[in-house]
Length: 58
Ligand SMILES: [Zn+2]
Image (cartoon, rainbow, N blue to C red; front, side, top):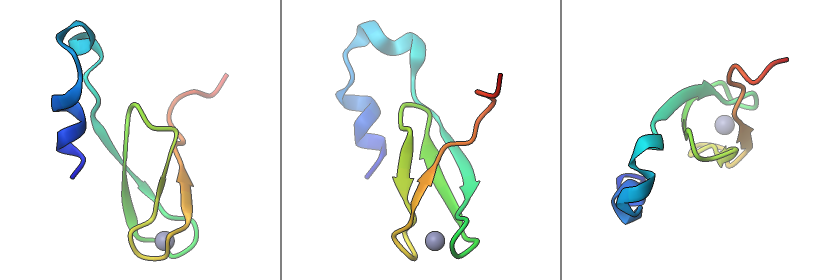
């Protein structure tokens, strides 16, 4: 389902091709894939909104 997203992108944005990162759902503890161009995603198991906690720490 998510792979379609990168194919829809125009060639000019190929430099920042999205990639998945696995985060842990704080609600149920399951691994959730969140893409680099998403700020949040929903846990497939419990539907909890999981936010990306990447190295965007100051
Ligand atoms: Zn969950």
